[in-house]
Length: 272
Image: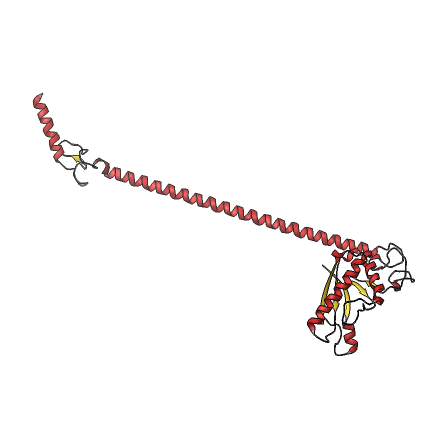
């Protein structure tokens, strides 16, 4: 028994003093004297070719799995972004279509209303209400639909209220001449009878004589004076705006007295 133990210890000692052979040996990674795995050397058992290959394979598989997961996440993100963009585009297109449809419907309704109004003749005098200064009193077209006892000095047009006489003012001032008050009374009555005209710009114009800036200021003061008079006659002030253009919008030649007289004027234009 003792002799047997001595032989065993000698074999272990021999094993401990041996190094594993190279991959080209007859028993790679084995302790030659004892023919046992070389586990006594640090790292020896973990670095066999088989285990190295297994670890490399596992690392490669892990890297491939991580790459596949990253590619999948990127693809899902791209798909989500594309879906969101398509949804936003579809919503915008739907909103634009709804707006266009609404505008088209409103335009059609306005045209229908205009056509109906063009045919409406409340007082049956043959003058459509849209052109009739007196839509509730019969009168000839020559007097713009009003009784002959009420001579008309204004006419209703799509562009606004056309006056057939001039609004006169004191020379160089914004004071309205008394002889023009009857004319403005008719303008107020027509505006009241035709709310469909909407907003009206009361325009003041001058000739080119004198200082242009002073003329602009004078035309503005005169436009404001007319607006104030119409408001006094119960025209809704929200429908009126005064604008002085001075000599900037002539309709005749300022080189002649007649042209200058035509350029000194007040106009009533429909505005949005």
